[in-house]
Length: 150
Image (tube, rainbow, N blue to C red):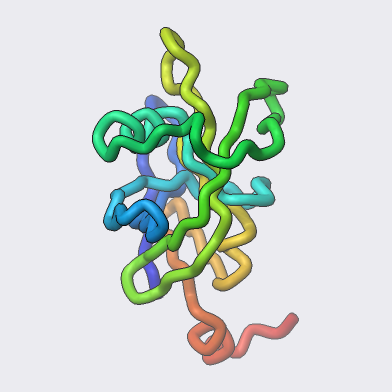
């Protein structure tokens, strides 16, 4: 089981989970990232702030990465995106994925957080209980032991 948490921003509470990103081809491991759990996102992506940190702290030249399709969210914001082969780790769980990285816009605030999408969420049964601030990712065997019927 992986545990997440709710974090308040003003009067709004949102679910998050902390993870680590490894970029084996670049020899980089252990980039800590706080992911907003987004059940509406098809793919996991690294947001503006974490992309900027990856570039400045770890020396990743984003423009040298493979270019992916532009990102467009519900708000209509479109931004350039890069893709890199990564390993995403949450405690004992890890998975390989093509990680989308949003290009930070110079002079603009970091508006889009890193998102944990359904490409990773599909590996788990996700339980979120805002009343008790619990966010739980159960592996299939753990979820099956609950005996919930489809």
